[in-house]
Image (cartoon, rainbow, N blue to C red; front, side, top):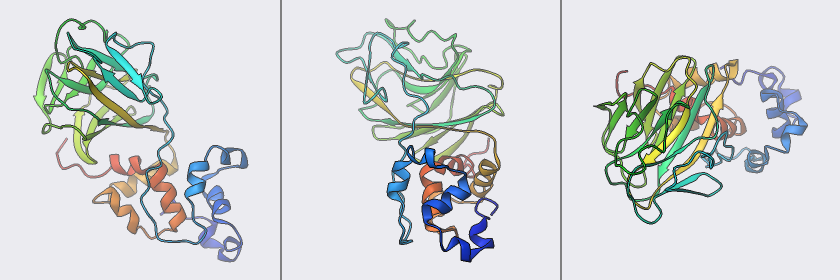
Length: 285
């Protein structure tokens, strides 16, 4: 429990005189200037110490979809977070790429919700390098992400694609499904989640590559929405969250950890994805 082993425990008389905001600032190293940028968290804090409630509070996006690299049959809405493929009709495969390169030495996690009907030759999500031409199949229908050796993609049918080859990875997903993507750039591993359930490692051959998130669709008037995009660097805080995650049956179990409600709320609002990506997978990798 090094994650929360602080003055809160070693000097309860002192901590009793601190507001919850000040206490958290000491634990997580926040300063006054940062407070202006953490208003979503601070507004959700309770001085009364009431029971913890899971909240959707993921307002920080480290990247969105890049308007400068889109296929011609793609529109972006909701502040470049939602992709609309083939607004009128489809005559091929359209794609969108993330605005930030994902480089070696970090961990990245993002979630994409299928906000329309899911159908057609293929709808996919995954990662690609800068060498991937996401516009080259605008007049043909194909499984674009994973069609060559510069991209890795999961199809809505449940197959994982890379270098023109595909194998069954999970079951089909439909409208409303939330697909999580975890890139462990420290070890070169790519994993997926479906509605918070870990699906296991899909590929291990990505070490040293600079990658971009990517989505594609062949179907008219289909949409995917980026719900969050997060990253973490190597730190003691990260290791503590990862260790706890490896011993939890699910993310909801965070509610029952014996730590103060405010800290628990902060962990679940900001670091829940770290716990999630370290949950034991139901599939062997």
